[in-house]
Amino acid sequence: MPRYRMTVAYDGTDFCGWQAQRPLVDVEQSDGAPPTRERTDLRTVQHVLEVAIRDVVREEVSVLGASRTDSGVHAVMQTAAFTTSDERRGPVDERLGLAVNSRLPEDVVITDLVRTRDDFDPIRDCVSKGYRYSIRTGRLRPIRDRRFVHWMWEELDHAAMHEAARRLVGEHDFASFAASGHGRESTVRTVFACSVARPEAGLIQIDVSGGGFLYNMVRIIAGTLVDVGKGKKKPEDIDTILEARDRRAAGMTMPAQGLCLMWMRYPEDGDAACAS
Image (cartoon, rainbow, N blue to C red; front, top):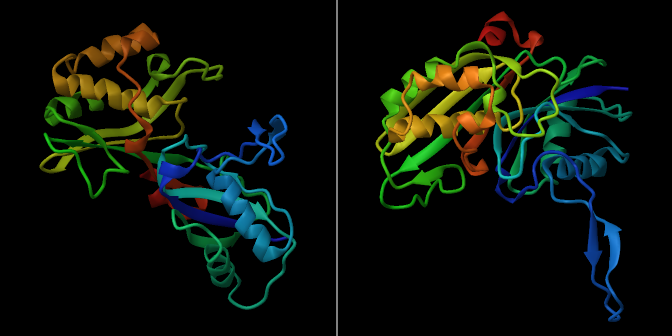
């Protein structure tokens, strides 16, 4: 059966995250009877993709995503895969992608869909990924990009933030930057690059890339760098925070809306791509 790899972009604002969820909820009865407890599909990116693909290929499919983004987190280049018995002829990839897109809501789109090897696993095979946290600063709250940035009225020292960010690069124990209950045996991770830029007045962008991240790690890194930008911490304090291996030593977990999954790299993408 053919297996497909797809690249998905989405505005995470109105999704309950990536992963499909069927919690028990109270369902009101039209006849006035007491509510009943039933399992209901939440609006997640995985769920709407599976429904749209199912409508095209006429069978149940399971979509596996590389990154289980939280509620409110966005993606430019999420990678996912699914297998189907549907054997199409002609320009399969383009036609299948267009057919699925025509059934998706306006806040999610498949930007690329290709046939891949049968054992392709978007989680296991990913060699690097990059996230961006965006912050708007200024006295007036943003309107145009308000769904994709976190707004702060005070200005931030982006140069000091960048100096602090550079200290996070390399292999470290990031226990101080992991949310409680992360469920990982090891908190050692490798950050390939971490930088802070100010591409225009009032916009701060924090870019972090690595082979993998702990739960909320990027948002906690962003919160810690914001503390540096406010002058509450110094760039050299990053070393002490890493050594503490204590969540209380780092900054706040920044809100989800400013975070975006920017890219993912795989061995088949080429050596140059995998090195970035």
